[in-house]
Image 1 (cartoon, rainbow, N blue to C red):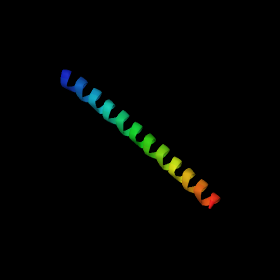
Image 2: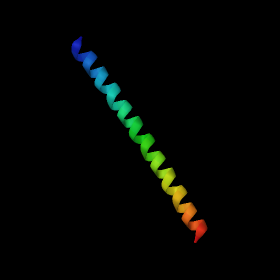
Image 3: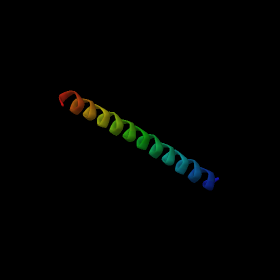
Image 4: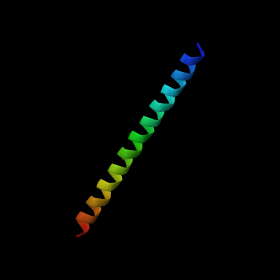
Length: 43
């Protein structure tokens, strides 16, 4: 019973970490694309 509770909590933490990591990667990628587009339009 305790093991399942700990497992579900760990799985939830891992899922949240994966979602946060994916969101950070998407944000960084869009920022990089935006910066590259700005530099490309200026030059």
